[in-house]
Length: 310
Image (cartoon, rainbow, N blue to C red; front, side, top):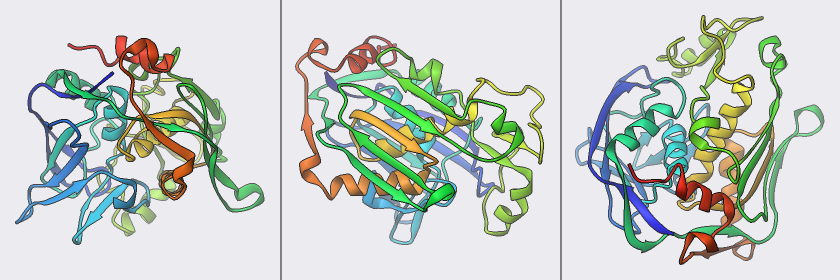
């Protein structure tokens, strides 16, 4: 089980869902043990953001890294795609403060990474294995929300949402994804972000959602989904929250060997969970595997499928 990067540089352009700004995104191969590193190449000098839980400075509606007064926003969908394809090392250059939203899911980033090709590196992949439960909670009663990591020989996620909206309530509000038997590309990557028309004016008033549209989000009025093509999955709302959680968790820089369980969690609580994990070094350990048959079944399966070379 070795580290991975991409074979060659790839580039795309898009618009930031919150800023509405056009942005050019470039992905470049990175050496072993680099991790995932973002850079604002539009600034002089460029500002470099090594990914890590303590680098996250804002979690309103997105996961945002802040350094030296500069920001890189909405990293979670690209991070989710990197996790789904097993990318350990990558340079990501952007020409504005926000990663492009593309179609609102991770599928465009999966395609971009596959276009670049996956390259194995001669250094062991480092996993973080959870040894004892870590949990964070906020609120009480009906407003309570929580997230936890528990020991499990693989990687699976169990998420519950509650939005009290007819269109969301009409779909499954809980989903479980186990990568021992399910595919990231098929089961998660295409789930889009979503929003409510009644929130748009408020969000735009604080500088958010300026680039949002039916092309890059599921949009709802008070009663129904406005997108003419409807949903991609019967439970697309909760699957997107799982997509986000995979990206938020991958900010720790290594694939996790655990089960993630969440009740109405979001970017802020996911980051708080990672910080709580780092504050408890006896709760985890770094592990590597000489071969796929020694690894947890979910990662052995991903090695053969999502992580296969192309």
